[in-house]
Image 1 (cartoon, rainbow, N blue to C red):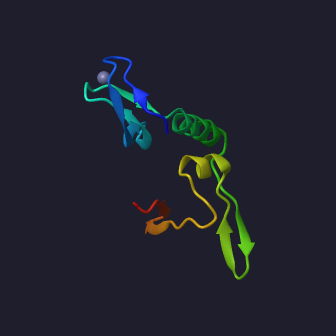
Image 2 (cartoon, protein in one colour):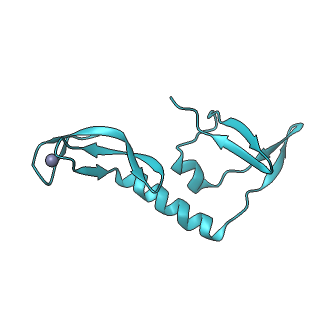
Length: 104
Ligand SMILES: [Zn+2]
């Protein structure tokens, strides 16, 4: 990413990946003066995801060999930057299946 200049104080901003946007930690830049800029790609991914889940409340299950696989919709894949080699941590809670993103 390019060097980012603060629009408040004019100093160079530090690249970070912990800007909280609606509970999602996204990439961006933070300045010593307290100002922060969000990465617009990450903001777009969150907007697209919320737009998608407003209309789509389910995911599909399909057969993959002897197992079943869950189809993850594109807005979710982009939001969490998943790829075919991604690993998710599985947890269960009563009637919930929980997939956690491993912390790197
Ligand atoms: Zn600043």
